[in-house]
Length: 335
Image 1 (cartoon, rainbow, N blue to C red):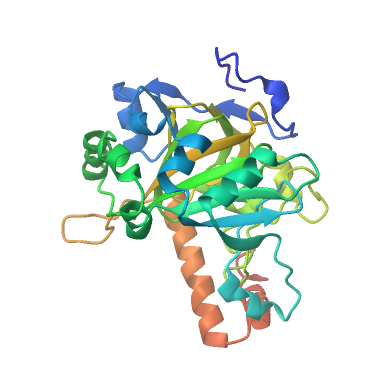
Image 2: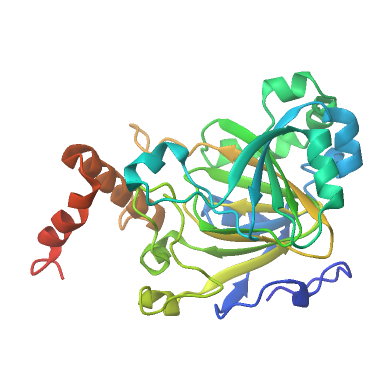
């Protein structure tokens, strides 16, 4: 477990798991090792970037003044877990799927009112709002965003052959909220603004130990394993899992490589946490100047598996036929 000098956070404020972990390296952003880890697509916590220095004042009262009348996307949950689901995939579940959260639109000032009055037993809130053109045109946040350390992050984009910036997602979470283990297919620079968040990361190679939902399922890209109460009979390989852990405080930046699994917890020493991420598309992998290197990396194998699974779903037109077909291919031949 990573040790921090901050008096605002203590290990007792986080959930205890049976998963053994080691600390994610915590380095000054100018450290050559930090640059190497990013180039090698390994997670690293970066300090002193000043990436979002002008946003460290984005506490609730400031955001009320700057974007109070803006409609924002807010998720509500009866539990502390906020597991993502794709509403477009729910029809494939034969009405057996029950959404774990409710998505609503509310003005930021209304969200802030609920956030300030929230107490244990109330429905939990998690705002996840893209900083799109509409939001920026009708708020004063653009002045803060213009003074971000864009030169550093653009240099990372260029040096590491990332694609374009696709989104900035502003997240405000009630204390104790958990986003269960999942992976994204984009590069992520995750900046912590207010409060503390705990990350437990797993490499793409742990795909089989985390038992992802099928690609057609609403919970695609999410692990089926409940970390707080793992079913080892159903998910026996989860016993072998080992994590990489870090706690982010205000101003910290985490490089989260694409396809790395991450379990995220808003720690309980502040009433809410505020974070902002920078999502970049994966860079091109096929061109006359790029040579495929073997053996393939874990994220490349994950992409292949997902593409094969998607192709079978599309071809067979019945998700219930995918498993039997894959078993017929494997059993007695590759096992």
